[in-house]
Image (cartoon, rainbow, N blue to C red; front, side):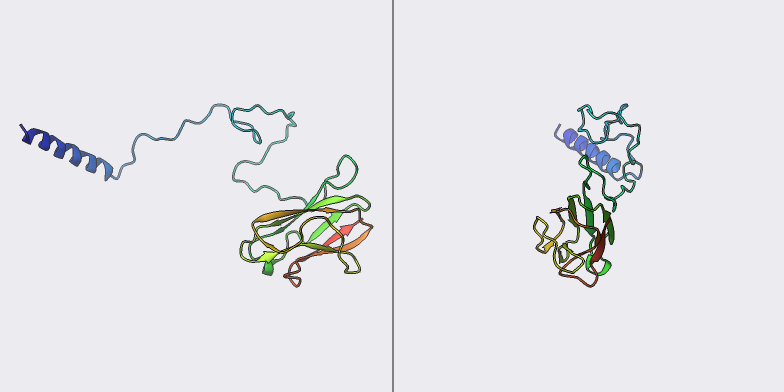
Length: 179
């Protein structure tokens, strides 16, 4: 009688090993079935969107998403809503992205420094046309990414201003044109 359970155990084990080492794919999966109604972008699953539909389509998942525009978006007060400058990995040799920005004169704005470089420290300061520093609010000390710093920039007069990384001033610089 003891030989029968041992024999069955051997057969079950051999069958399991054969099934696991088979070259064919299983006919089942643990993945859930696709939802018939997709969740709108920007809303958590199960939460309805409160934003009105504009008819504009959003980029498909995995497609490149445009980075922040070098052109500021006007705010309700007529000023610029914000500008973004990025330091990608190896920015010490490739520089800022973008290297040119534009904004309106006489309106304060925000300037975001998106440091994605986790290899060395970078910072961003804004220089007046005479090369003196613009008094912006925010931490302008060099830091290793990834991380963002958001600066509040006062209203500027028309002219060309330079934004620069003080750690890599030869390669990491750009021009802010104020019109």
